[in-house]
Image (cartoon, rainbow, N blue to C red; front, side):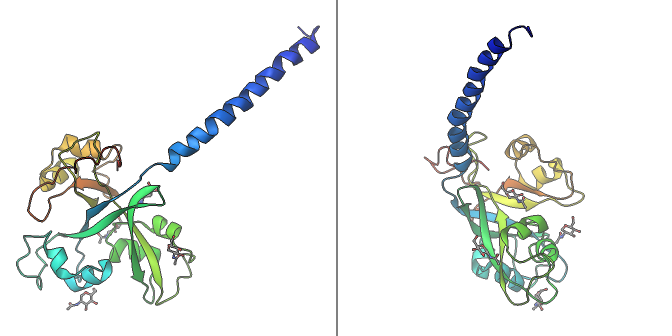
Length: 237
Ligand SMILES: *[C@@H]1O[C@H](CO)[C@@H](O)[C@H](O)[C@H]1NC(C)=O
Ligand SMILES: *[C@@H]1O[C@H](CO)[C@@H](O)[C@H](O)[C@H]1NC(C)=O
Ligand SMILES: *[C@@H]1O[C@H](CO)[C@@H](O)[C@H](O)[C@H]1NC(C)=O
Ligand SMILES: *[C@@H]1O[C@H](CO)[C@@H](O)[C@H](O)[C@H]1NC(C)=O
């Protein structure tokens, strides 16, 4: 073989050209595909806010910028807004937007207080609806140098449903998992079959004790609203 170096060389040249050609042909295609992750969001999603000791409805209305009357519509079991300590979680309505054409979420504006860190804003103020990592990615302030009294972005992910899983569910809660929960308990609490919950959250470990999952939720009439007709393939998670 080493006797014909020229012949070998000539064979390799067209192969290299073919590689470049493949790249040129494939690259624009891949780019377009990754840009079209969402085209629109939905008007309504719910944040499942776990109530830590000392929090109250007034604080929650401030954090989410929603009037108490709007929040109460999605929490029919609350009889007295001044005493919510029997509640474990509160559903807070928000709009689920297609952010940067890339993913479904909503960016809340939060005013920082002395001593705030991305960690306590995610873990306490927003009750694990978002994460420290996610906050440091959507804000320009370095994690160790967040000024007091400024507005920062708090992005909470959401879902509008998935036509490939079921047409019967069109409203979803962003639900932070806690220690002690698993697929069975979340299924029982939400009244949604476990198998369906897992299909909406492929790869999620419901027993992990942390992380968010998307759980079908009831609307203000106490019913699971279906996916709107014609919402088609617009959105997945
Ligand atoms: C509501 O909670 C906030 C945050 O924990 C607290 O600062 C405020 O005093 C509470 N308000 C009442 C009426 O308890
Ligand atoms: C948020 O998650 C952290 C770590 O998993 C946990 O320690 C904390 O209690 C959680 N906060 C709330 C309000 O559940
Ligand atoms: C929200 O979604 C984005 C895009 O899919 C992902 O990178 C990010 O980790 C998610 N954030 C949380 C808190 O799950
Ligand atoms: C919040 O997000 C917006 C839009 O991406 C960006 O222009 C702004 O600088 C962000 N705010 C901070 C404090 O980083």
